[in-house]
Image (tube, rainbow, N blue to C red; front, side, top):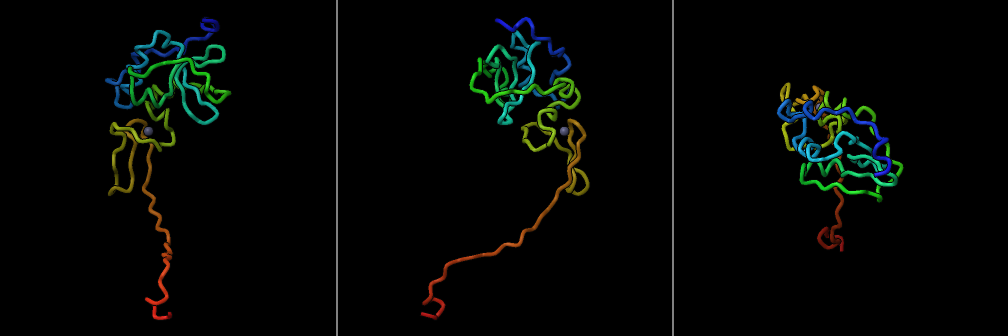
Length: 161
Ligand SMILES: [Zn+2]
């Protein structure tokens, strides 16, 4: 339990991220946090491999879980003391404020991840889409690459043998 008391509260009120308030909020993340005794200490961290973790540091360990695992499995996610995370881990400053504002887009600001819940509204003849969670807009970029076909051909078939 050392280091436990010195950690500041994350200031997060779970009532503000209820999935019934807005579809941008992950039901799985909400149900996971509701189950954690120390949920008020939970922050989001990025390790040296770019993997996101949710939990709190305790000496050499991070007590918590991989964020993607929590997003997929919710309350079924097991927390553990992780020592095998590539260090140093960095806290994502202001994560919960960003999450309250943009929901799961705070986890994926590049809008490159797939979520099973509806995230996009298709606009203007299918060439533009708007994020239903944070209003981010993307357009469809179509690139046509020239393709060269290469194949081995038998000499006798070409009449040269
Ligand atoms: Zn978004």
